[in-house]
Length: 454
Image (cartoon, rainbow, N blue to C red; front, side):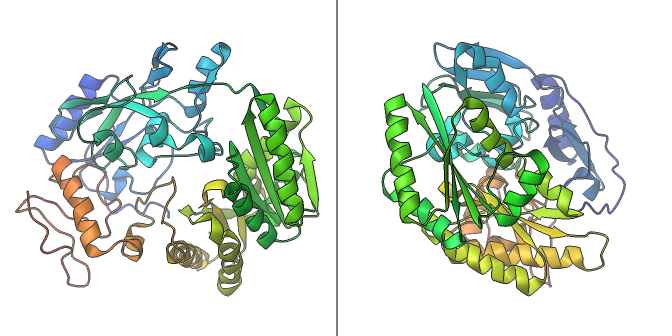
């Protein structure tokens, strides 16, 4: 959804260089009741950008781009939030380590953003998403206090505030430092391409691999349009005669990888695989992944615009959801390309449309909402890693009861009682928690009228 400015910003965009400056800025904004939107960069209009507000300060963290400490003994790295995801792995690669969560945008996405959205990646099936690899945070609260949570140690006493901050989408504090876990590179890594004549068979194969007790490092799926678009874009060597393609990566000791690869291929054959190919070199394995990680720009070459959705479903419902998604695509008259983390059921449908065509954007948003409702209907959730933000906030009621949202907002109010941090995000009708605070009214109704004021 494009940013639609309602008024010029009266407060400037700021680029602090250290935590003390962030604290000073936030403290000043708090004293003057100015909204604060923290982010790494402001290179284009974004959802919920400060231009939506008459008085808002954009706090850019682009200068927080240093790796502060590499501690191999404790297997962790401490960085500033503007450091890119890929830069962490590159910094420790020579010593035989890497950072496991690897979003497709890892060359550009920041670790601070990864924490804010609890991002995953192609290897999150075995090694977990950001929260499973996060050890510590330094954050600035809305009153200017600087707080440290966790550290280099494996676990912390007390309440799991680190877990609350992870995935909080900038609603609770400004992240100024991050400590993450690093892992030793596996001894052996192998990858396979598994092609199928229909989506049902591919979805069944995913479910059977996991049911067999095999946990691949990565298990990704692409449908036929995604395969063709990607192959035209980067020549990854994908088969073009399949309706669905799985990329399965296994890692560990050589003997284990060989045995599990054989078992995966046996399962794929039983599911009717028409293509089974094992990477014979590291270069070929990298090409397999180059195609998957190039899927988004590849779709950008075949459609004037595309709209990326993020929802998660139970693995066992994959084939059903993909079939019903195809029906929704026909119903709305827009094409959908599917490329996603099949192993953990995290879907990323790409709806193709033309923003220059009247009504296309509105139809696209309606289709996106229907797909997300479908995810919840089958037992899934509205987001696996991209967050709720503005785009999905009006769908929160599909997944949560009013009591659920009241409890979530109580946490928001405890950290930011005036609702100044990243306003307008997540909650369908965000209101201030202060007793005399202003409230947003929708269709003549005040949201959560019985929510206690703090």
